Length: 247
Image (cartoon, rainbow, N blue to C red):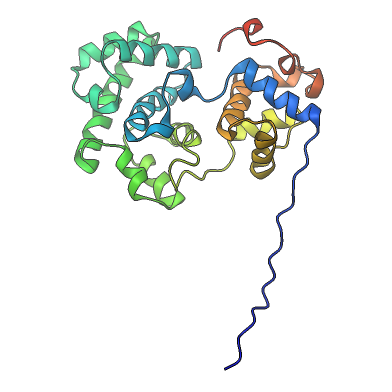
């Protein structure tokens, strides 16, 4: 029997070439504004399910229309009180949660968020035995994963996107498109706004793609892109981190 020869020819992927100026802007951006929000909170999702549970609570706080600094501070207040995960929040009474959220600067959304956290904890306990990380462990399909997360009480597209963005390479299904704000900020800095080429740039700059994407999101949140010439003329491409007002 003669061997069957496939006519399919492997086509090599286009290799992205990045200039030193582009690489420097990427590194300066992350060095100035910071990278992953999870790492800023002392959470390392690469270290396993318990860290992912912690990040899920933090991501829940980012889902409201509140400043990044208030969400970060509120998470720190919760941790100091022993509330490190959504399951921990479920073990609190509503009044205590409201007080903690208030103390963190979440005053505008304290009542609503306390109710949301309790409902979220109850849903995760009922559907997943109290472990949100089960969702990512069981679902490798990106669409199914996003649908399961979006079905959680209070978890809309903003929360799902923020949560999964920092789980690239950790969960099989965390293969999401580039955050739109990151794409706009990348275009502003004259960096590639496509995920593949941005990933290549991160590698050339010795950065984690998640840090570069988060840095671009931070730029979009903290900088008036419309009033800035962008590219090498953007002041945030050259400032030291200590010179930047915290988000």
